[in-house]
Image (cartoon, rainbow, N blue to C red; front, side, top):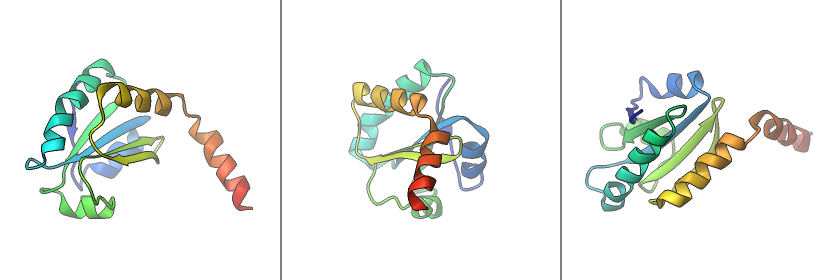
Length: 120
């Protein structure tokens, strides 16, 4: 599966409707974004069970602002609708695979329960 373009209209629904969603915030003028794009595309092909979204920060400035994007590229990972990872910078393929593995293995329900226990 290839990447999916996300917009202000499709972002929330995509994150809510899918188990795992990775999102690459990028811009056409950004050199590191262009270097990361083929790595991200290859990972999308290798993991068809995961939604790989892309947000063009120039076209979707409101969405980028809502996501508090201050540096691009920025990779975010959502699991069961919850943000579980966010990091600026172009990742090499091996590091992206580590992120994918960690998000896949994460028990988000247990993590949320533990966080709620700490707040009480």
